[in-house]
Length: 310
Ligand SMILES: [Mg+2]
Image (cartoon, rainbow, N blue to C red; front, side, top):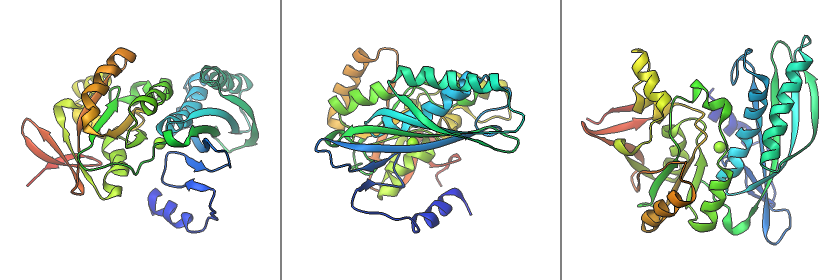
């Protein structure tokens, strides 16, 4: 059974009521807490030694990563993070200095985004460190962006550069909180998501799962230098474009928007965020599935890359 099938099974067992605006299947749960202007955002995420970081990783970076993964999801809803609880599972022979380093990393980034850490839980976990973060945020009701608002013909945009995050970005990225805030206040996307599993995979949630598709333009996809370097230095690694389509942990924003505002958006983005690329990479189609236009023709895109369209 894969992760999605498991989630589907569990979903049926969970209690729900009318306070749930959005639950499983969004970047964050959206809860009506009887406030006239805001909804509550609620998110949890865990990282595990040996999977999301190695034993040799600097502890400050581990702490940073644990927090920013949740912040990235709050950003994807158009929200502002407020407070967090931390659960840490430690092996019996843990190093107190290493754990202190983790909390230093967490505090530093939490401070930067005005997030308070208000408690949590410590427990033992055999062999590996495990950190679980539960994060609260708020979102103005009319600024909240879901995965489901995409329309055929919408332009598809992505921030930053994609692929090769494993070279270091996955431990050091900054969540796109202020960029998402600016977007929802100036050019509200029809749908938005943060890239955690890879472009070709996460794009499904805002298109295919809504009964839509997408046509991408290969030359418009922003490929990171690390993805290019990796594809050059190791002949067995993926081509750079495939890496940009399929590598996980980019933590950039992927969104769709009315194409009429695309030029104005690009112009104002450049003036507001001169150091962060914004790329229009394609458009939403009313046929389910992904295609990519390259100089060699049109290909089908899968979550593993692209295959020749026969
Ligand atoms: Mg997400």
